[in-house]
Image (cartoon, rainbow, N blue to C red; front, side):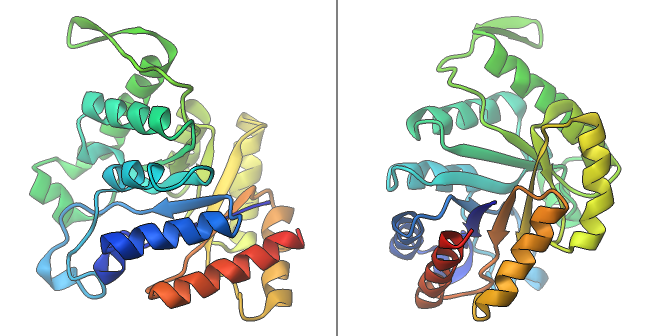
Length: 265
């Protein structure tokens, strides 16, 4: 089992010095990965806790790639329909290149009506856009020369493709993960609810990884280990602890607690 932590790229915790300091603390503690989320246009009546302040996830990870050396850098998840395919592919390849291959690409089709409206994108097309973009991404990472809209071009740099974890609920996310991804990033961390979908995914893709976010009981180490063991038993391969709205001090305590858990795994 690999252990990661969610890093708040939103609200006051996303101030540059705090953001970078928390990432470095996670790396120095020996955690496997850190993860950021994606919101691009929060409406005023839905801004509690963030004040509408969100750092772009890809820009955030590019910034953190220069502040860290080992830790994995994950999107949990990047909302694929929000961005045009080619510039997104270039962002992804650039982060993968400059980080030395540390990107972990969680992707999703999105859900928030307000953001789709702000972008002028038909929410009903989000699945089709996601599939087309993931297909394009795979072609970019498989070939130096790629074609888009009838124009051939060189896709360089072309580092190793980052692993792709498809977020969302069955059945669509499982089908998308089997076709385009390396694994699934389900909603929630209830082992009983995850067991059957994981079995179904592995029937289609035996080597699929499963990444899930969970609120681990770090103040009760025995209980936290039981949580991890239960998730591992149903096939989860990476647990990302959600630290909630923790300030820097609380985040560092969570990092220390996760590191101690990791020593016993």
